[in-house]
Amino acid sequence: MPLANTPSAPYYAVIFTSVRTDVEEGYAAMSDAMVASAAAQPGFLGVESAREEVGITVSYWDSLEAIAAWKRDGAHLAAQKLGRDNWYAAYKTRICKVEHDYSFFA
Image (cartoon, rainbow, N blue to C red; front, top):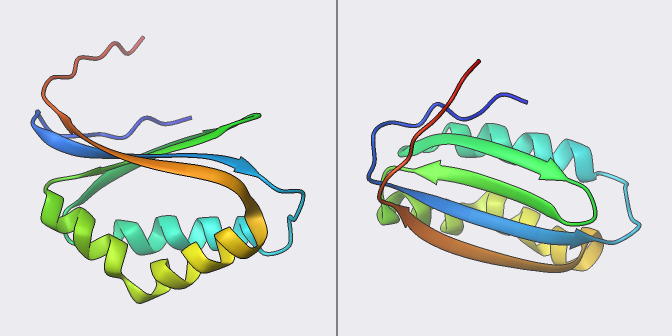
């Protein structure tokens, strides 16, 4: 899986962890649409995602204002409602400031 190409710190990370229900209908399409929609938002820097028993999606942003704008986005609000009603048994969102990062690529 490709890693997000983030700029030099500082920047922000939104960590969305979730436990899914058994409902699959519409989930993959909505997930893809939300990644595309987030990528079009001002301040979006990248995203990484993995799913096993717990799903973890981390999106990266240049400011708290950009994160707040994404949270208020109409399509995102509609997806959140569908997620609560259909796809998620539980979830938690955390917002963090990335003060430092380092990497290794073989």
